[in-house]
Image (cartoon, rainbow over all chains, first blue to last red):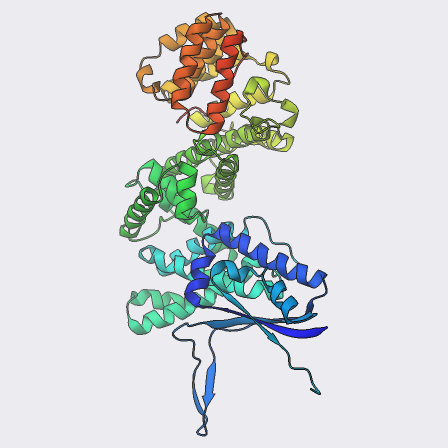
Length: 118
Length: 424
């Protein structure tokens, strides 16, 4: 088994637009929970991970300049991550297809965790 | 892990918007809706990872509160909101107490029933603001277009914003004056669910449920618990009890005569009876009392043939005196037919003064058809059912009426049908 990180990426606009009415939100929420539960039941979740704040700081250059995060223009933002266990990258990518973020114009970035000692 | 409660966000949307509108001012309703949307977005980002919080309502309110404070601070700097708004914010905690939030929904409900709005606009506004129905969902409920509902809602919100402030629930005289409009709007909402044109049974059941829930909010406030409010709640419960039996196993519309009465919801029936008793505490005899009483007569008959039709005719006579309407008169005529036979029923229909107004109502023609069929005039019956079919508003009604036309060919009359909420 290898480990992979799912990075959930979307824009603020896309996620708001995709949310729809309260009743549609209810359905999205149910879909997220069902998907997470399915992955957990199948033993694919190493660490459920965390949601991330949409704002932050950027520390840059030899001057250590601190600026507000790159998110003011609400470009593609990482909203959270999950640590996944899967046979290989192909399986990890396949498993991510059920992620509800895809319904709302978001993206799942699937990245293999570099194994130590390699 | 806490379960996600059914319709949680719909409920919370109403609570949150009502509270934030009180804080921001009625002219900033859009801002309140925006903040709620933000809080919901947040929930969708966080809950999949952390699970549903133990107290989702409190979580959402706290999140909305933080967001609201941000907005107010920013707006105060920009000086686009009134200065008194910024001051109102200073002791933030009392703004969000449970009691204050409970009152907010009542305040919003009364505000939605602004006298400058049509009844249809009042109902749409309540569904949108207090029940979290989107424009499309409101349009679906009333079988109208997105554009039509959007226009109606934006005009209604404009009227609301122009009213300067939310309805003041602390003044008993004002409250008493506005209450009938609220009762009427809730009644119409329920009726739309029970008899409306939406082809989807699920949508209609939701409307009934929301009407019951909002009426329940009224019952939590002593100033609103008048006999008429109890009677309104009673009539909703007694009718809602029959909802499970209105569709048969195949999903077809099932008339009262054919309903499997064992599928009537006993809890709702008991609750309806209890509320009906509570409604009898004063001299007031509202239309809701009479409709609830009619529903109670049906509910108390274990079989159709046990129905006390004489009592029902009497109740309809009284209802006609309180609120004259051709639909009430039609329902009365049907009860007369049950008591005295189809000829007397047809005479009663012929005697309805403004029966022209029933021409566009499919169940008027269906009633004529049913009574003609019952007295053996199959061809006349068939013509009436044909007229009804041409007016049918959804597949369920069409299917039901086609079935009745087939019954005309076979010469098989039905025993009774369709008493329900009467004012349309």
